[in-house]
Image (tube, rainbow, N blue to C red; front, side, top):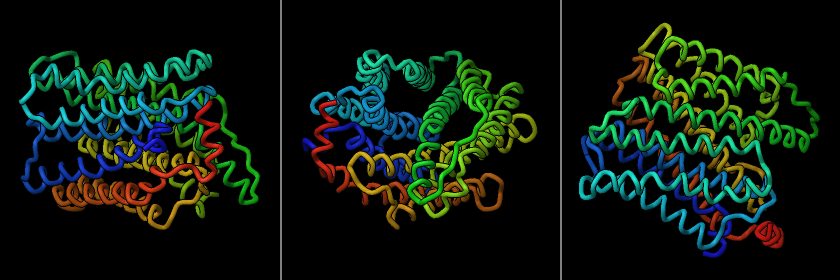
Length: 397
């Protein structure tokens, strides 16, 4: 188990993938089949959205930042007992969200909310010592996500604040999208250039600085509007559509079309494209067609957030265990199944198929995709790096 707790991606990517599969099946059983398992809130839709964002996605965020920040700052990674404590906090939150009313709700909220601040505190010394100013933004995002989580808990127990639970969940989606847009803008061009260079194709990533800046700023403004309670107003619709256009313009300079034969790279571009399309659809829903609202949100969540987490987990796990950066046929199948899950969910939302059937089918495909990741990556996450000496060097910082 020493290897398993040597870097944050190992435990958190595994539990994230398992929870993604299991929690979604809980929702399918509840929504489509009327089989209600133990959960803290009676409103199954809010519970489902909360657990996807603050359970599954929070674990991926923790695993990624605990791995990436030490690399960026040349600091010693969080490992051993501190990493076990962080995992225990995440597990305690998931248990708390399944205990019904057997605990006072403020205690449930506290147990659920502590994980993300604990991740931030664990990373703070490395960021401060490395004077990594550009990473301060992640602390702000984590802080607001934690606040929104508290708003959701309070709202679900009758304490109305400036956002209702659904509005707070929507704001959390845009904050997570903001984090993905920032991180994706850093790593996708690098991963793409390196992969194409190995394939014998030299390319330059040519994105105008203004497009780079405005694409991130527009998502930041969208997250701010949503967090302040204006996420469904006309200005938010305009900002969302502008953000979608800017992201597509940003992607145009990344040469994603040249990575068709490289699944572990093209899936990153697909995820980014879903975010851009989801933002366009969300803006259109506000300005022209309200019925597109849920469709747009699922383009952002299943398509953008879901695909990006699967893509990053599969690539980061290979890179940090000294393995070749190639997706197996099984993982490529998981990528494709997840795209089908988005399309089926959209089909239900625009009345091309029965809505309940679309929820069930999409949920099952999501669970299969992340279940396949867990199956393939379990031995990778449990075993030492193929070049163990490098792993020891990384652990020493």
